[in-house]
Length: 303
Ligand code: C5P
Image (cartoon, rainbow, N blue to C red; front, top):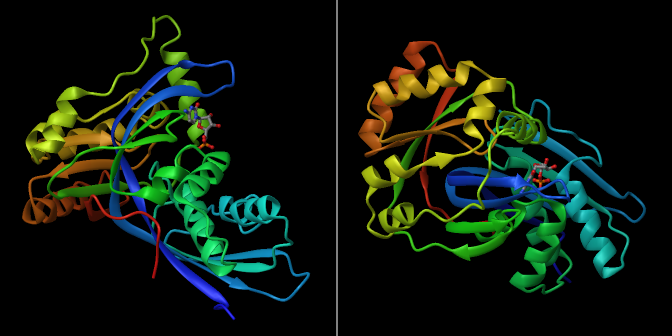
């Protein structure tokens, strides 16, 4: 008899590079996305429940406002997808202990879906390969495969075709969180609107960023951070420009909107610099709350 419950710890991510090509006919954009998994974690426990109860979910923790507790939650979709692939009726309860900000551009929903896939695999002894897990992840969302792998990786296509990136050293981050999230589709639409007059080239991996990661050159990585969604996120949430400015003024090595925002990520030289910046940002009154993290860290993992 196997266990009746499995807990998986899964990280958040920041994008060191997010280059967005034109919108394709399927509505998605071709991306180059350099992901780094960072040390803010959700814990997802999947437990077997009695026959006929279906999939239920509860969400606890600091950052739960706006997380659906029904079948629109990506973690529930992940459990049901596993059931449909392996042709069994899924009766489980999913408990999410959330620390990753909701709708913050840090892949919190994708992280919970990734964790659920790993937990379902172990709970029902499905013995899926990494490739099978990734393929299911792609069906759920573009960021899900990376949340399974973790570390540092380049995502192409929709962001879901991954290659590991060679990265040395540990990077320290300060994150300025907003209490109200941004909708990812809305940010992509705003990006298209703002660039409608421009010729958009196919996105390319930044060689400079790759070299700096290989050399553990945090100053270089700070300078190389880019995000094509940043202008769109700032257009929808003008206060973000001020947050970016305050962080740069207080000596961050790099300042960037994370993914589709509204979280702003600041790369700092070391833990002391992180503490100083966190205090300065809090005192400035321009940010809701501040947290610190380091990366890269592992992907979704059973604990
Ligand atoms: O794949 P995922 O469900 O995370 O995508 C959320 C939304 O982000 C999509 O509905 C789409 O609007 C946008 N998106 C995109 N191009 C991508 C990835 C996401 O336009 N490559």
